[in-house]
Image (cartoon, rainbow, N blue to C red; front, side, top):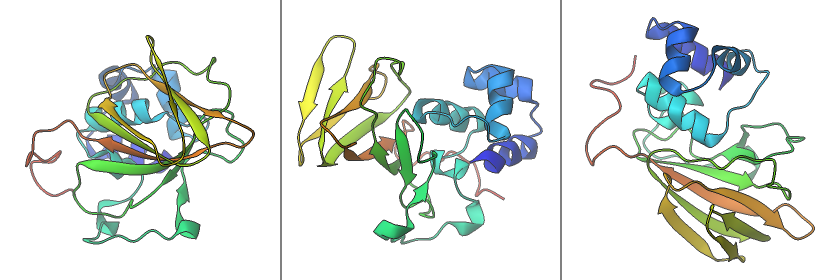
Amino acid sequence: MINRVRQLRKERLMTLEVLAARAGVTKSYLSKVERGRSVPSIAVSVSLAKALDVPLDSLFVDAGELVEVTVTRAGERQALTPDDEPGSRYEGIALQAGTKRMTPFVLHPPHDADPVPFRDHPGEEFLFVHQGRVELITPSRVFPLEPGDSAYFKATTPHKVRSVGEERATVLLLVCDDRPEGESAHPHPPP
């Protein structure tokens, strides 16, 4: 993602200040993201994609690498956060898929969600617990989820997820774009 954010920003002739303001982050934080010193959350990634007017998956893969049908083998998932990340760890799935309204990830939530801020962003989210147990936490309620359970919600609801049990859970996370059906993030195909 590091070079993609910088590349997309420069393609749009945006300064760090302009993109930071549009995405609602500080210039210094955006600089850290572009230099690989900080990994943005999904919520911040959604804000960056919206500010750049690109689909979320464009932050992770070049437009020239997009294909019509994408198969991602278990061993081929792209780590989007370091293995030693104390917060949520993400792995990209189907990053090379063409135009899409949802972006899938494998999520490994942390055990301690207290220091993790609640996230909210436009669109919708779908969680499916593949392995382990988790809690989907909102400011007003906690939803315990077991393997095979799922949750679908408006991503504007402040939320965070934590693993429950000895091992970090494995969760399928789908982040859905909030654009109306048929409306593209680009008025024309990306360069």
